[in-house]
Length: 108
Length: 122
Image (tube, rainbow over all chains, first blue to last red; front, side):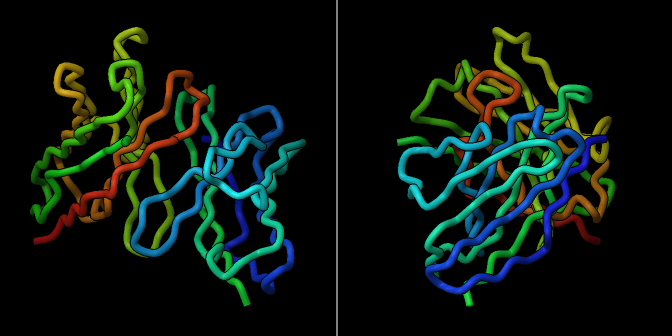
């Protein structure tokens, strides 16, 4: 089955840029979606189809995907961005959806 | 306003059964694929399974961890999706979220419910 690998944690100071990676075999050939989840809340879609932002998501959130790594980038990080972030793809070979293990973003 | 409201969670003994419901409103339910995603306490998200729309033959797919024990169904006349869980194990204990994707298999999960807690314990 397809596996997505994320770092367990990323720390960043306010106002700086956070980059959260999602590794997978030839993930650049797949569509990657990113979700933000704050404690006690349901996940929220923040990036879809590698780099598109849903309405209401700040422009500070961006995404890229190439080769074996997809990246979620959060510019000018704010305290309110502190959350768990998950990448997700659809694996056509198994017709299964797969989540990465999640990354806890800590704002210092 | 889009709403997905799960219900039916609770405490069940190992080996028991439970049926979750997901009532949808605010979008075209019949044209959407509906998914269930679960999250054990302190753990990550795990896709459980999905049912596609009538146009896609109501095709279902399940994670290996639940295949043969869980069944997803839908009633488009009631805008409701269901998750029938049989032969429950303690490791099925989790918050279960209902979520939807628009049409294509690669579409994102754009709407989520608030989740319902299922506890499997004796």
